[in-house]
Amino acid sequence: MVWRTARRLDEALAGRVLTRCDVRVPRFATANLTGQTVTEAISRGKHLLIRTDAGVTVHTHLRMDGSWRVRPASERVPGNHRIRLILGNDTWQAIGYLLGIVEILPTAAESATVGHLGPDLLGPDWDPAEAERRLRAGPSRPVGEALLDQRNLAGVGNIYGTEMMFLRGVSPWRPVGAVDDLNALVDLGKRLLEANKERDGPIVTTGSTRRGEQTWVYGRAGQPCRRCGSTIERAEQGGPGEERVRYWCRHCQT
Ligand SMILES: [Zn+2]
Image (cartoon, rainbow, N blue to C red):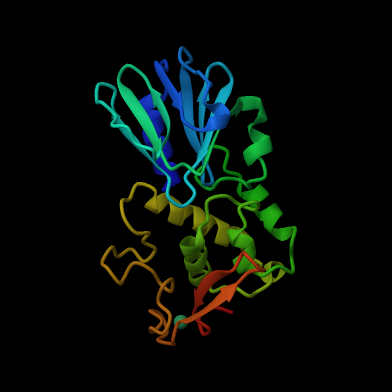
């Protein structure tokens, strides 16, 4: 997940002077950050921000196919048309492949790019009250849509959102305004993300890492509910262009 990518980049780059900066997207191809010291690499939702002591931020987003690899600085990087960005120091080089977004901007202008995101569940500035306030601003909206809207809180993907609603007994179609204990739902989301952030492989919400036992309802349409035995249902939710598949138990979630 993005949080772990950010941590890997932070470990390789933070506190070290950039000795290599190779930006292979036309708009920033002449950008040169060598000589600047990376202060930190962090994730905001699915965005990655690498900041330097010169007040510059490298903003990237993995989108569908992007990835970062960290290799020793001494290793030769083969020519590869999928590489979008290389940032290196004396010890490490971080190579970004097929990144959906690569841009270089003043750190002070970050909010114009990612400021629309709600509080990040894994961020240092996590603010549950602000997340709840944003959710409650749309009381008639189905909670399944509101929870997944990254402007309300950043970091909840479809698997987490689906599982959070099951565990709290909340139907994806219940309006936000009818969820009294929204704070408990948000708090649970944070705990699920925290429990998974170090893990390689699939998201686990049940406590069991065994294949087929990792989720309560997500991906289990037609199978029996682990709590009540009712058949797990599946339907699409969201406006045009934003449809996402929801799974839920009609008996356990109202
Ligand atoms: Zn059930």
